[in-house]
Image 1 (cartoon, rainbow, N blue to C red):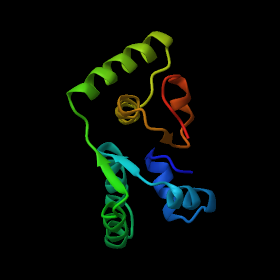
Image 2: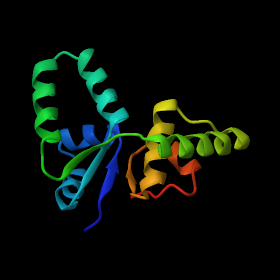
Image 3: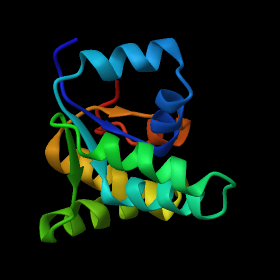
Image 4: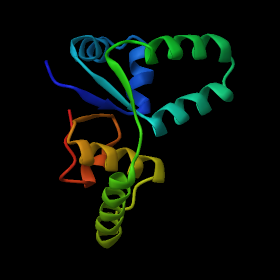
Length: 129
Protein backbone atom coordinates (compact mmCIF):
# COMPACT_ATOMS: atom_id res chain seq x y z
CA UNK A 1 0.00 0.00 0.00
CA UNK A 2 1.50 3.33 -1.01
CA UNK A 3 -1.18 5.81 -0.01
CA UNK A 4 -1.38 8.27 2.84
CA UNK A 5 -4.12 7.90 5.43
CA UNK A 6 -5.92 9.80 8.16
CA UNK A 7 -6.25 7.83 11.38
CA UNK A 8 -8.98 7.85 13.98
CA UNK A 9 -8.36 7.35 17.70
CA UNK A 10 -9.38 3.69 17.60
CA UNK A 11 -6.79 2.86 14.95
CA UNK A 12 -3.99 4.47 16.96
CA UNK A 13 -5.10 2.31 19.90
CA UNK A 14 -5.12 -0.77 17.64
CA UNK A 15 -1.60 0.08 16.49
CA UNK A 16 -0.30 0.43 20.05
CA UNK A 17 -2.03 -2.83 20.96
CA UNK A 18 -0.08 -4.51 18.17
CA UNK A 19 -3.02 -5.69 16.05
CA UNK A 20 -1.15 -7.21 13.08
CA UNK A 21 -3.37 -5.84 10.27
CA UNK A 22 -3.14 -2.32 11.68
CA UNK A 23 0.60 -2.48 12.35
CA UNK A 24 1.10 -3.67 8.77
CA UNK A 25 -0.91 -0.78 7.34
CA UNK A 26 0.86 1.79 9.53
CA UNK A 27 4.26 0.44 8.47
CA UNK A 28 3.38 0.42 4.76
CA UNK A 29 1.84 3.90 4.68
CA UNK A 30 4.14 6.70 3.52
CA UNK A 31 2.23 9.35 5.47
CA UNK A 32 -0.01 9.05 8.53
CA UNK A 33 -2.19 12.11 9.20
CA UNK A 34 -3.49 12.61 12.73
CA UNK A 35 -6.27 15.20 13.10
CA UNK A 36 -5.76 17.52 16.07
CA UNK A 37 -9.09 16.25 17.42
CA UNK A 38 -7.64 12.73 17.51
CA UNK A 39 -4.57 14.05 19.35
CA UNK A 40 -6.92 15.61 21.93
CA UNK A 41 -9.00 12.42 22.28
CA UNK A 42 -5.87 10.32 22.80
CA UNK A 43 -4.47 12.73 25.40
CA UNK A 44 -7.86 12.82 27.17
CA UNK A 45 -7.81 9.04 27.37
CA UNK A 46 -4.35 9.14 28.92
CA UNK A 47 -5.50 11.75 31.44
CA UNK A 48 -8.02 9.34 32.94
CA UNK A 49 -5.85 6.24 32.54
CA UNK A 50 -3.45 4.55 34.90
CA UNK A 51 -0.20 4.74 32.89
CA UNK A 52 -0.16 8.41 31.88
CA UNK A 53 3.60 9.00 31.64
CA UNK A 54 4.37 5.89 29.55
CA UNK A 55 1.38 6.42 27.25
CA UNK A 56 2.42 10.05 26.71
CA UNK A 57 6.02 9.02 26.00
CA UNK A 58 4.96 6.46 23.38
CA UNK A 59 2.51 8.89 21.78
CA UNK A 60 5.03 11.73 21.63
CA UNK A 61 7.53 9.41 19.95
CA UNK A 62 4.84 8.41 17.44
CA UNK A 63 4.02 12.05 16.64
CA UNK A 64 7.72 12.82 16.07
CA UNK A 65 8.06 10.20 13.34
CA UNK A 66 8.90 11.70 9.97
CA UNK A 67 5.86 10.08 8.30
CA UNK A 68 3.39 11.39 10.89
CA UNK A 69 1.73 14.78 10.52
CA UNK A 70 -0.85 16.47 12.73
CA UNK A 71 -3.73 17.90 10.70
CA UNK A 72 -5.08 21.27 11.79
CA UNK A 73 -8.44 22.70 10.72
CA UNK A 74 -8.50 25.93 8.76
CA UNK A 75 -11.23 28.22 7.45
CA UNK A 76 -11.93 25.87 4.53
CA UNK A 77 -12.41 23.02 7.02
CA UNK A 78 -15.30 24.94 8.58
CA UNK A 79 -17.09 25.01 5.23
CA UNK A 80 -16.76 21.23 4.88
CA UNK A 81 -17.91 20.84 8.48
CA UNK A 82 -21.03 22.91 7.81
CA UNK A 83 -21.84 21.02 4.61
CA UNK A 84 -21.47 17.64 6.32
CA UNK A 85 -23.46 18.83 9.34
CA UNK A 86 -26.33 19.91 7.08
CA UNK A 87 -26.17 16.67 5.08
CA UNK A 88 -26.20 14.43 8.14
CA UNK A 89 -28.89 16.46 9.89
CA UNK A 90 -31.15 16.35 6.82
CA UNK A 91 -30.71 12.57 6.69
CA UNK A 92 -31.45 12.26 10.42
CA UNK A 93 -28.06 10.62 10.98
CA UNK A 94 -25.89 12.95 13.08
CA UNK A 95 -22.48 11.77 14.22
CA UNK A 96 -20.40 12.83 17.24
CA UNK A 97 -18.97 16.35 16.98
CA UNK A 98 -15.33 15.28 17.12
CA UNK A 99 -15.95 12.79 14.32
CA UNK A 100 -17.61 15.51 12.26
CA UNK A 101 -14.37 17.53 12.51
CA UNK A 102 -12.38 14.47 11.46
CA UNK A 103 -14.73 13.90 8.52
CA UNK A 104 -14.44 17.55 7.45
CA UNK A 105 -10.64 17.26 7.31
CA UNK A 106 -10.82 13.97 5.42
CA UNK A 107 -13.21 15.39 2.83
CA UNK A 108 -11.23 18.62 2.55
CA UNK A 109 -7.94 16.86 1.82
CA UNK A 110 -9.45 13.80 0.11
CA UNK A 111 -7.26 11.38 2.07
CA UNK A 112 -8.72 7.99 3.11
CA UNK A 113 -9.85 7.62 6.70
CA UNK A 114 -8.72 4.56 8.63
CA UNK A 115 -11.27 3.98 11.40
CA UNK A 116 -13.44 1.24 12.84
CA UNK A 117 -16.35 3.64 13.42
CA UNK A 118 -19.23 2.66 11.14
CA UNK A 119 -21.00 6.01 11.40
CA UNK A 120 -18.42 7.40 8.96
CA UNK A 121 -20.14 5.16 6.38
CA UNK A 122 -23.05 7.63 6.54
CA UNK A 123 -20.93 10.10 4.56
CA UNK A 124 -20.70 8.75 1.00
CA UNK A 125 -18.16 11.35 -0.18
CA UNK A 126 -15.77 10.42 2.64
CA UNK A 127 -12.91 8.23 1.34
CA UNK A 128 -12.27 5.18 3.57
CA UNK A 129 -9.48 2.67 3.78
